[in-house]
Length: 239
Image 1 (cartoon, helix red, strand yellow):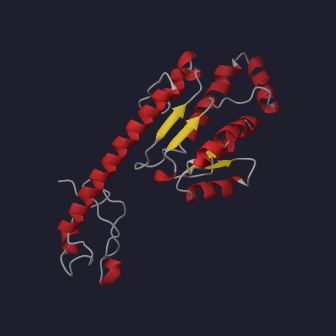
Image 2: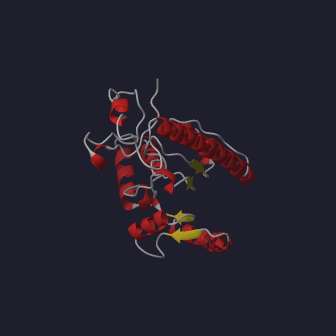
Image 3: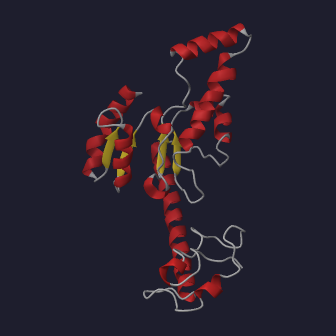
């Protein structure tokens, strides 16, 4: 995997950096944590990571918008533990692939997808480049593990076109949501000078953010005078 990552890095680094996109590669520059922090701090960047990035890192919201999985994450057959455990399963009359390798790969597959989508507001494109997900009988077991629609494309150009169209739709939806939020905040009394001196608490009274009657990023702070009684952000209230 690391050798493949280095070959990919060598091919994409200069073309991407010419376009202002920074390339970070695991195993060559610094620790995993340092790479993750540098990636998060960059506006436009590509991160080439191995299996260790499947756990212990979090890229919320727009910090990660495209996740590409080159190969389905099956355990390495030559790994001593995998060999020994496979032999034990065979002695028990079980198929090591069906009993261990495939279920383990599906768990890792979902963990990888979880780097992209972990929260309700997360959005992104998950591209699987391994043709086995379409050509092998076990392929649907991977796609069904995602619980979302999966679309296949015939070429890189088709993939890029679909991704661009999807992102344009997402950004348009975000602009519409922001416009609705801004309109609601104006009606609620928010503006350049902040909320009206009185009435904002009465407007929110009776709305339980956790009941499904409201969609709020954060619950209002405790009522009271000054900043302590001001909610950080108000989302639209469903009638």
